[in-house]
Image 1 (cartoon, rainbow, N blue to C red):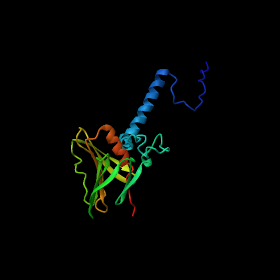
Image 2: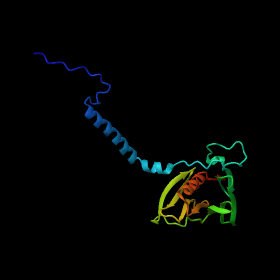
Image 3: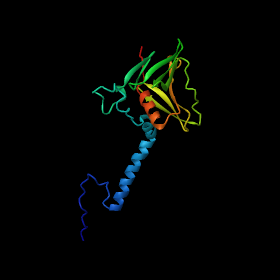
Length: 201
């Protein structure tokens, strides 16, 4: 008696099972494998480093009577502020106030309606004022432009939110901070800080 011939294989998708239950298990295993690869290659860190993009409030980037106010302004639509050897963009109504200007340190703040919103210190020996092991803070690294910054986010209200650019010993470091910020204000601070660029001179 001749052996029954098996149906010819197409050879293209032979690895995909025909049984519905096995097919479902195959799909689940595939996505599980993708998740494991994402995790092992630093997926969570990459997601945190990117961070959510927070658009500035509409109308803060230009004069109130400007007909060209963007509907969805970006941080680069704000006005540019230059302090010593770094720049950043701030909402149009904010004012830059230098409180200390010396050879080794620049200190100042950005104000809105004469109220401090964001503080900065720029100098060779500038420090964040918080230790990375301080359990009151969540600490993460983020690349901003060509520089690496350390972001200290308080776990409880009332503490400083700090972004620190450590450039010691060759160049001046920079610390920017806000005190007792709400979640919305923290997002605004990070949107501003992500526009920081240092002079290449």
